[in-house]
Image (cartoon, rainbow over all chains, first blue to last red; front, top):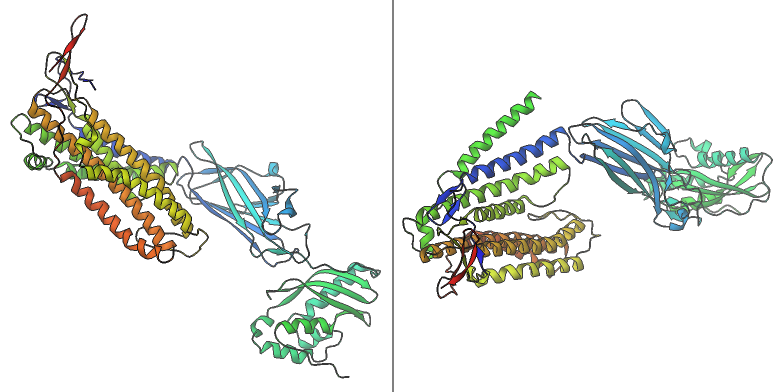
Length: 326
Length: 306
């Protein structure tokens, strides 16, 4: 392996010659130190001016207040500018991307645009479903944050009673003070999942004013199950309240007594399947059970919850209604 | 704005004071080095060795400090998190400083014509076999531990696993172990390439005493490079063992836990030990052979000289 030395007897190099056979440039330590200091100082100066990739932090929080189709999944995206310079949000997309429990639900629209509300914290907020209509770009100063909220409601449940988790992705395109645009994704999955309403029988004899009747049924369920209302009022919305007051009191002092005070009934759907009778799909909120099916009957011109429905729900708390006298 | 510049000026002043502290003292003792390496120094080689040791030491230390400081500055400037421990950047800077010191030192024949050594210099002659073997085996162990981590660690475990060496969820620990399996071979490949570069640099020296000193300096450099590379690999192995210790169950966890600490200690101890452990370079050449090129008008290639 011949290796040639290119240092001949020409003019002495501008370097420290040590001995006869070696050459070592002088002040290498100083040169190295200058390079290190320059790189470190340069890096922090750039940071002070504004990072090339903006330092943003954020999270997408998705939640479903109640597991019902009527309560939409809410996604809240909060993005904070962690850098010392301004940055600009140039584009914002929030899309529902999947359904963990039932992917076929959104197969037709895997990434549809959702209504978006952006609140810059300065009193200015807006809501839109049209990305082109958004008042972007929005500039965030150092330390400022922006909150984006969006809602998603299920418009077609594949299977009654099935729980569907929705995943959302928010994509932000941000331009730094260096003019560099970067894309940032935030994802979140709704928890708890949205539960589809139970199936109801075919409606065969709807009342003349169906909407008013359905509203009355919903109101009857709401009152009968609201523990904060006077007992007399609640019992008045039950077709036969015999023994219900005692069973309810027993439930309050039972193992699930804490829950009975907070449970409410939210009606998901009503089917007037025969004259004077309705099958009702409803949800016991905060009870941790899925959608349930009950009955309402027309008594003296007023829709009331049936005793069997209330007693079946009290049975969930381990309390049985007393048998009706024969 | 004024406050920022005042802060910058203060930082520069502090850095200058740190520089003076680092480079003070003139480096290692040439005589002690010669004794350890088994070479004799005379009046011509002693200043050479002293200057080389001083410059090498300064560049290594500045490289280490630079490696430790530049990584967070890079992250601050770019927003890209390099996600590696500071100690690894420190060692990387140390390697670069060591390599720079060696590359800065050039050899000259002092003759009137160009000369070239015809002797083949091999890395194995400049390194203890144990060190060379360790450099080859460490990356393989890292790859094996990476595969074991990918196989045994369940990333879906949500419990946090805080430890001294590593921290995070099982997913983070597994990712770190796999990353270490990639980084360790890369680091050792870089170190081996640097060592070969150092060994194969031109050596147009004609005085046997100078050759012996030059070989000893090269050997010191390649041992230092190898030891630092092994320290990097050892720390990465320690991270992998830490991941296995805290994200797997018995008996793997019980085996990996003491290895985590052991590897960490061995990595640091061998780093200090190998460079100072004298090694006699194996001389394969029976005599110095050179080829000469007459540098003159109409340059003609000369004959080999024995």
